[in-house]
Length: 406
Ligand code: SF4
Image (cartoon, rainbow, N blue to C red; front, side, top):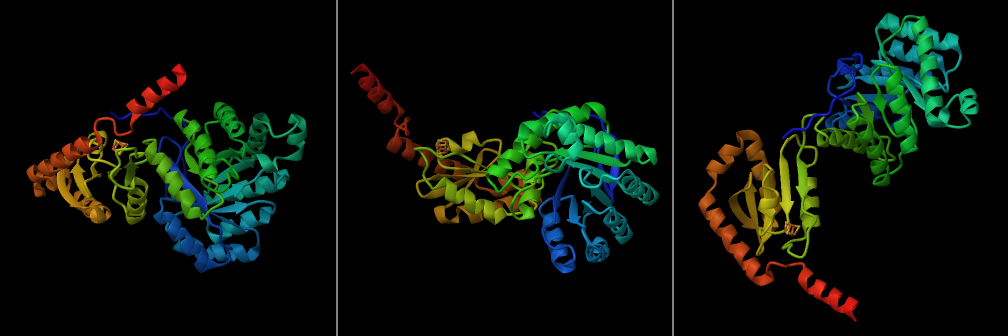
């Protein structure tokens, strides 16, 4: 059964050819970490980001040399490029001259109304979108003082002030972010913002830090809002290779059913006393072998043939260990038995076959009778060896009762 989340209605804008808002698929963004003036290095990173699932990339634009670099990067980039502007409004004008597909302005850093309006007017003339990127850490000091610190209300007010300047020059192609590193604060700021605007929203937990803690923090904030129907485009801000950000963003959207699956969804059992193989090792090797390959299947790695095929019967393809062998199954049906050391190679080969020819063809090419017979043999051997209580829970319970009874 597919569960769908109702999304809040927002206006549609376009960043280059990529639509944002208006019910279009939620997009993944990331930011390059190279010096933007290093054209080849930046393009290399942009290509890696695009391959990992990034839809829109942002590059910093903080000096004239960088804007010149952007003029060479934009025409060669496989995805739309946004220029990130902080203190100098002239850099926004230069970036537009360089041909970028959009801008990000930080209202806390560019505060003179005439500068903001000059940028918005130029963006309007060029039909380019702007993100109003409010950041808790660089909030306008006047708002910081008014609210006694970084408050959701202060961040929303900062965005509304910027919108008012944009509206004065009749500019409406904007999206908004109100990021903070504190997850509950960021969630509340977006909730409040979504009540007062129909502009598309760009979600993110800023300065989330290195993985895995950064991944958890960013996911907590972004997923909470997405499940409430808030958010049109997302960015993970990790202290890591930006490819990790793009991959995480993509995986989050896929796991919530908000984007079509692009890569393998690898599931694996947590392992237990029944495991016949080092599940962590096999799953890690399988994950590496599939990498970013575009095989949109769910693939399972299970520790034993006793329960594995049943527990992962919904997976397109899976492998379960037993008696030093790997039992491959497709949609819960045993299709082949391979040597334990060949488990990962076999998974990849079968995944490629299914991707190309489909599940039915994969089952048709297998000797399912033989595979089922072998699987049944290994299952009963393991049951005979380990019994029905492989984790020794019954023995433990007896021991607990004895201890408590004493
Ligand atoms: S019973 Fe088998 S499949 Fe389930 S967790 Fe244990 S080893 Fe994995």
